[in-house]
Image (cartoon, rainbow, N blue to C red):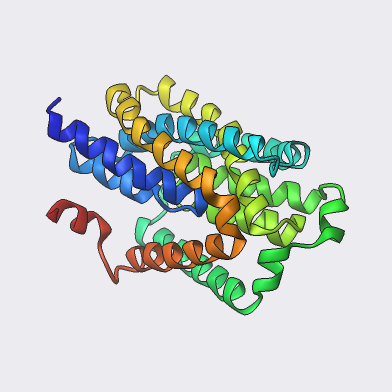
Length: 259
C-alpha cells in the first residue's frame, strides 16, 4: 500500500467522521474511495463498518463525558435497530439501485423541509415525548431503520435522528448523542455478518478509521459549544448535497476521482 493511499484514507476519514458525528451521509465518501481504490461494492460496504465502529466509540465517549447521552432511552431504541441490522446485513436484495437511491433522496429532502419549517421542534425537543416509554410503533420504526443500516449504512443517521427527535422528543444535540450510541451498538453485529462472508478489507478499514476517529473527536468535542442550531445547519447542507448525488444532479464519486 502506497503512502498516497494511506494519506487519502486518513484525510477522507477525518471528513467522514466529522460529518457522520454531526449529521450523517459521510459514508458515501468512504464507499466511493474504497471502490476507487479497487474494492468491490460489497467488500467496500463491509470494510466501512470497521471505521464506523471506532468512529462512534470515540463520539460516544465524548458525549457521555459531557453528560448529554441518555443511555437508557438510547439502548431501548437500539434493541430493535440491532435486530434489524442483522436482517439487513444478510439480505441479498435485487432491488433496482436507481429507484432505491431516488427513494432515499426524496425522504431526506422531506426531512429538510421539516427541519427548516419547524426548527423549534428540532432544536428544543419535547419533554412530554421524552418522558414516555418507547412505544411498539417506535420499535417497528427502529427495526426498519436497522434493516436499512445493516444493508447499506449510507445516510442511516438521518433516519435515526428523525426517529429520536420526532418520535422520542429529544433536541438535535442530544439526538445526535443517541444516534452514535445506536450505531455503535448495531454496527458490530452487521460487521460480523460481513466478516463471515469474507467481505472486509482490514488494512483499508483500520487506516481509514484513524481519520474517522479524529473527525469524530473534533465534532463531538465541540458539538455542545456550537449548539443544536449549528448541528441543524450542518444536517441541512449535508442532506442537500447527499440527496443531489442520489438524484444524479451531482456525482460525488466522480468529484473525488478528479481530485
